[in-house]
Image 1 (tube, rainbow, N blue to C red):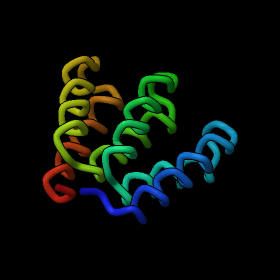
Image 2 (image 1 turned 90 degrees about the vertical axis):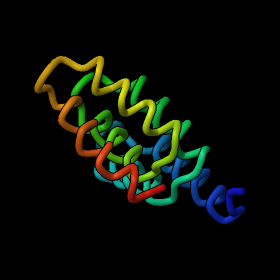
Image 3 (image 1 turned 120 degrees about the vertical axis):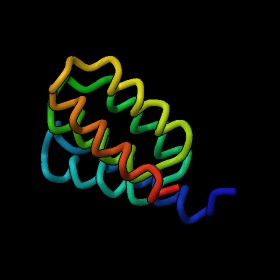
Image 4 (image 1 turned 180 degrees about the vertical axis):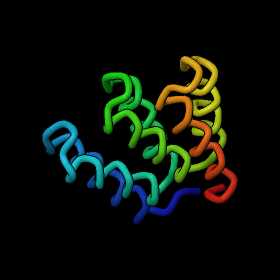
Length: 107
């Protein structure tokens, strides 16, 4: 069961991310922090952010990295999907490889 504190922190970080200008340091740090907080709510939001971001942007790559930090089954499944659907050698594919390496540490 997820900790109430974890959920409170995730909700605040999602709010910070949503309120920041796209691609700013504040927004990217909120993504990284969301990955460190972890939990199902964080994973769900990071998957959504990945899908809504323009391909190859710092925002999209940050969401991939944060998914690796979150860990868990849903994050791992999404990272595998990103890897398999990305063109070979793209930033997204390389980021997914790196993030998959982090999933085991986070889980």
